[in-house]
Image 1 (cartoon, helix red, strand yellow):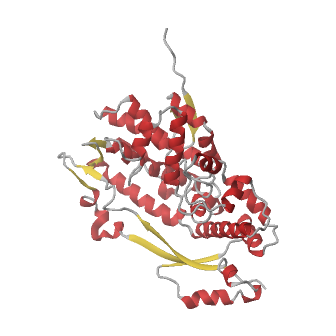
Image 2: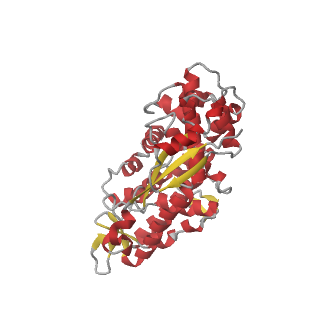
Length: 407
């Protein structure tokens, strides 16, 4: 009697139907840790600029699995040996690569879980799940940590032209309508190959890779580091820091139990089952519900900043290529003198900092090109993008955020 394997189909707006046919992957999809990603937006507060940017990390992870399936199929047709077990391990590694993200992840990492990065949390989640599933994730963890002998498998999960970047560029471009990020992922995957267990791009796919790198550079400056999204995230960071200060002073704040725990404890590492389960209860709704309560709080800073995010009445922001001078900062502060704020409170309304982006890092996880003659060399040896090294330089800009005085 022929056994018919159960097939799960997910209809994705980017790729169409995505097939999930490995039982372990379906079980991971149904797990509460992964379902939580439905409640965490991929682009944080970017919807204040791009109203359509409300897609979740759940969608992104599923999209990455689809791209990994396509890649595995492509490489196998080119004679690359990938066992069934390895193929499933590769899919699990990319499925769970972002499972450690919290709500508004970057703001949280700079405020209430300082020093706890989502990459390390993803590994902790994977370790817990591996115990729960009797070691079924061991190979995926080895790939994720770059400990597996076939290095190309890790490079597909984390590299300068990995499947994570491919999906988020294409997906974020779709939901923001910023066409600059609409890369041809299918073309790039078709050009993948493996030489000596290292991922390479066939020479005829080089221009698609160049477009990919340019798209990522443009998306960072136009979308991910858009000045309005940036100031909103910086405000949220300051709200959480201020809320933590009030919490420790004994001020009553209405919030969920999950968020209250992290506001009230100095968490330097989330490396126990108890802490991980507490963190897994946090999602966007905890933060947004807190802001809705705090906009009515008696504390001026908490009330005002929360209201600013909820009602999109953000601080003004200026961005330039050189650092702002001290007198420029002090001038903005002096205009707020009628508010009678302390120096500490004033720092929430006038502050400066820097942002940077590097389109390509030439010495880290270099993209390799397989020439028509069979030789393997680095992308920068072939591409005109790197003439003068301008494309691989770190681009830095500086911002000044300030409140506009109202009298």
